Length: 105
Image (cartoon, rainbow, N blue to C red):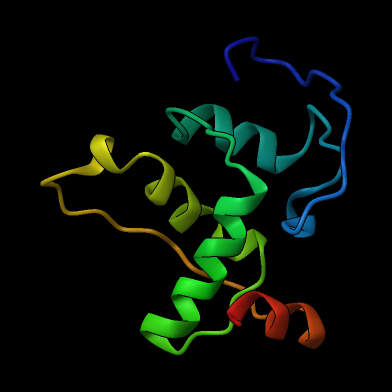
């Protein structure tokens, strides 16, 4: 984001597979991110897994990895969000059933 251009990075397997994929500088997504997004944060795989489990146990929501990353960041950065009203967009329920069962147990 700071470079205002797409920088190629290595991709690794992730439970948030919906966030994988190349990005082109001419893509609408790239333009919107540069205009509206202040920061992008990385989260750990374990935090995504915890977020999926938490969303099921506390809210009864089946959420895929990519849809749970906002909650994962909140879990990792609790101090940053302490005593604040916080909104996280939770989307996507396209998660493998066996993986989901593994994560909620």
